[in-house]
Length: 175
Image (tube, rainbow, N blue to C red; front, side):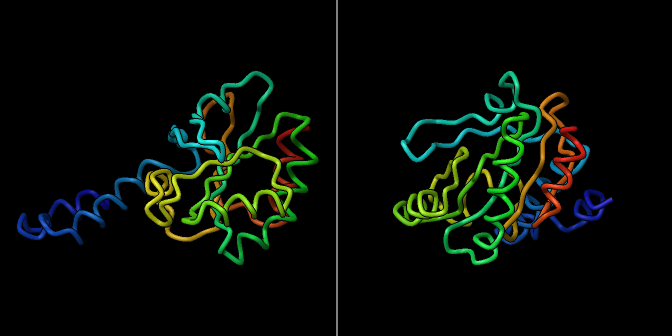
């Protein structure tokens, strides 16, 4: 496995910052994925209130939660918004929720995108760009990226759902 391969490297190499970044990336990649439990997190909403993912996922009536990584400066992310809005409007009455985790740095840009694009779901950010704590925890290397969580089991049932694929998947799951 990857872990056995990495453990064979010399100790002096393991002390470098480059090694530590690779190791963190591998560790995180092994922790998250389809069939594995989602990783809980807490981050502030636009009003500065902490939002804990497990509070949303365990909320009565919530069946599936999409943890969606995006940013206002990301063209492909903004291109996904019509599909996200459509899925949210169609399926939120049946127990679908979205937690948008923004990799923005500029608070005003983040808030303007939420308002101007009618993104009426839950939003969080620490405004740390690529060093966003949740993005690092989920090993996000590019955006848009997302993870669909089954609230009953706490397992990730899909990831990287783009365009109409999200709506099709939710239609199957929320029959």
